[in-house]
Amino acid sequence: MLKRDNAYVIKQQLASYLGDLKSQQLSIAKDNFRFIEGGQADSPCVVFLHGTMGNKSQWRGLMQLLSNKYRVISIDIPGLALGFKTKNDQYSLTALANYLQRFFNHLNISSACLVSHSMGANVACRYAALYPKHVDSLVVSSLMGWEQLFDQSYWQKFSEFKQLLIVNSLDEFQSLVSSLFHQPPYMPRVLLDFRMRDIQKHRTQLFKVLDDIQQEFHLLVDDLKSLSCAVLAINGENDVFVDQAIIRRATNLLPAIEMVNFPNCGHVPFLEYPKKTHEVIQKFILSTSKKLDVG
Image (tube, rainbow, N blue to C red; front, side):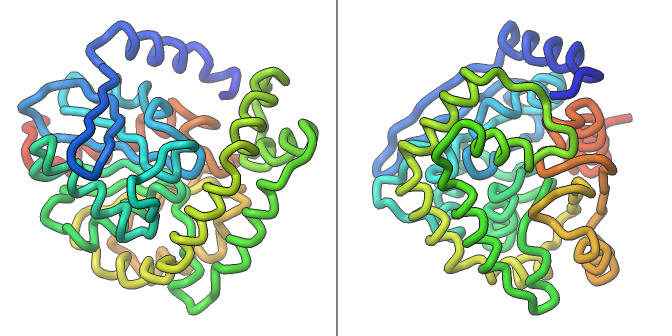
């Protein structure tokens, strides 16, 4: 979080805790669901998906911003949220997309705009390909794997990422966190230490999740080409996981996808430029909503 947006972030986060956003849990048949829900129950729905090692709470500020017009829901994704498992311990992109569909069914969500980040964006693309009638529009931030559109393998980056997760000191972990940003924010060492220990505790499980996802990662190519809804892709020009040259090629190959590239930004635009990220996503959702009169 950069100093220029501190006041905005604090205001949005505080409003989200004072507002109607409520954390909930459901255990139904073979599934456990953990989610935050708020907003207008009868309005169009926006569902938020986090990335690897993220969680449902990271979207609270944007959820609060949209809650006056939309039903907003953020869900913990098993495997991607540390320590949160599926009951059958399966985490392929298809398995996670089907888990999301069961969540939609239980909450009577007929369709939604999906807002997603990083590996959660890969889950969102898989879901949109499998269940196109349930996706009104799609936002993918820091989507990984664009290279595969041009027959380039992404397997090496999986190996590199797993290697980065093998940290043995706080300095190593701080270096990993800093690599996600163009301009790394200040983080207290006590918070870094807590986060590092949490990752170390769940690292074996996290590697299993990444291995499951890797087996279906190639499906992204067909998934992207099959998308029939409006799509917004947000990229940081300094993202260590997303090559800007590939993004430019993807823009030409898939002109229907609206590409927004943030200069001086790394892998987490919603943290590095929260206000700008929120504004871009809000504008896209308002412009593509099928059911809401925005006039």
